Length: 98
Image (tube, rainbow, N blue to C red):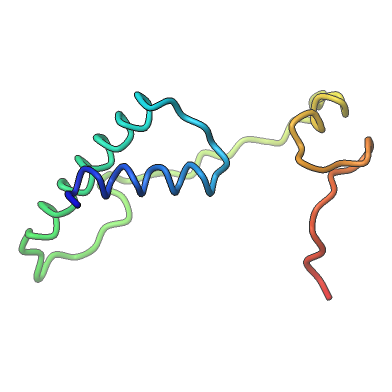
């Protein structure tokens, strides 16, 4: 199996896990994009970086926080519309604490 088929299978698996549905054309497009990303990462892995200090940002970044401003939220029905499980008032989620 070639890299292109591997990329398509991986994209299909990720879509399945994320519960996303794509057309055959979309899957092919995503697989091609994914393959190009993998090829680019392979090029980056060949770079000689010994002695190069890691960066968090290429340019100096300032934290630009703003004050919280309360505003109107979504209506309950709209917020719950796409929830896989709800009781009409709250989201229903699996128990996470024993």
